[in-house]
Image (cartoon, rainbow, N blue to C red; front, side, top):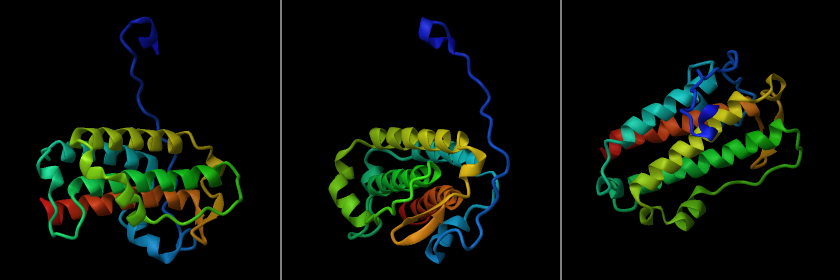
Amino acid sequence: MAGREGNTPEFRKIEFPAVIGIPERTEAPPYYFKYIDRISNGQIVEELASQRQEALEFFSTISEEKSLHRYAPDNWSIRQVVNHVNDTERVFVYRALWFARGFDTPLPSYDEKVASSMARADEVPWNRTVEEFDDVRRATVDFFRNLPADSWMRTGIASDNPFTVRALAYIVAGHAAHHMAILRERYL
């Protein structure tokens, strides 16, 4: 790219890998299919990229004040929900990286309640939370777009359960779709 010398950067068309295909029921524990089943696009990298744009457009309609809204007293605020999506995406992409790169050490569980309580997301300005989503999702798309073809079906153990890298990519997309639907239905 020419941008480093002060010139206008050249933008390239994003190329996505060939159709990856939707995970089989043996590629993740049954619980995670509530996320995987939300995604019908066999081109998961393309899906992750389009989700990014859709989410950013949606988030732009939410004000700083509205981002602190909770639909019930004991529920997370909108900021906390998006922070949770960011954190969870990082965890599942890390798992995908670990397995794709051939590591075989099992990975620990992830407790979203612990993570959320330590994040103090309501103290982070809304625009920074949205920027973080954008940064995390861009990194996710880059990781999966550049994944060698033979890495998609590699497996590993996390939370005492087997996962394929492909299933983890679908879980990332489905988890975000799940929470975007909750935001639309219950918060706004």
